[in-house]
Length: 347
Image (cartoon, rainbow, N blue to C red; front, side, top):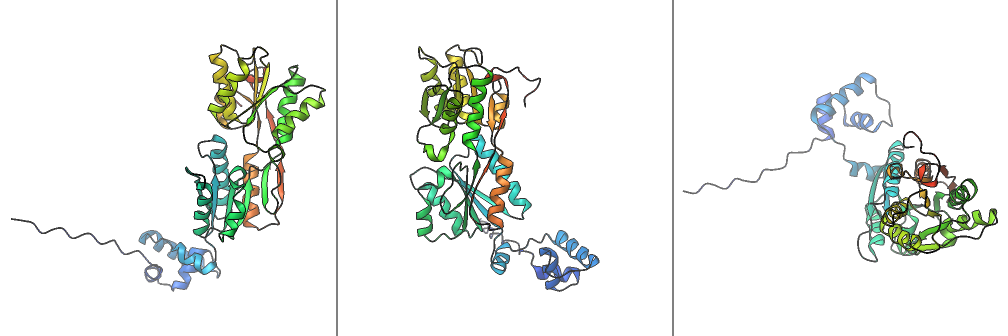
């Protein structure tokens, strides 16, 4: 004896605006005015009935239909190169909050494997009819012309941009001054003769500006710049640079890194070489992410004003301001790794 196959369950019918209007005893236009906050005013008593109907029936507005009606999806896109980097994780959080305060959602993606992955990610977001696109500078460069050639017309803002990008709005830190603060602290306060630099292996010095700040700080104090190690902006990169620099006979007494992740890797290398930080080698990092509070010892760092830069990036997109390059000052956060006294709690 065989049983009859169970027919597939049909999906429940979605609650519509008409259902809400019928339940509340109003027109569909009134429901639309309440749900969308206008354009016409509705009495508080009527609005309360509509909201109660929405809650009772579980109504969810059709955002696609609304987007077609208004010509806007109220959605912005974000593409960064490495979502595992704490700096971009913190930046993304601040961008999401700033977008929400302006009534926008933020869709984020990162380029996957392959040389064209970042471009595909940007095009994919644009195909979803986002209202604007935010792209990290390292991800954007070399791809902007092709993005336009393929028909993407959304407004675009470039973040993590220490230097202007011709024709585009860009937001970034005053990286040269930030790095000069870090090096100047080691030279002037702690009396180091020169400071070694760990920096990215493929950066454009004119666009990156961190190396320029390192050079300027030495020049300001009449010193010859220290050694340079070029490596990836990663923990592994910092670890390799640390082994290279700290194993030398002329080992530097102080090192600045161009990212927090590099500094964390360098701390590991110093530990393996049985060098004490800061007694044997002082370390200062760049970015100022939360991770630097909890290293051993806690890292002195120059902090990027991520929340302020995120608000500016969203404002440039939403209010369609004239493209410009906006830079923001960085702050030196003093902790134990440079040789200053240890605070009572992480700062």
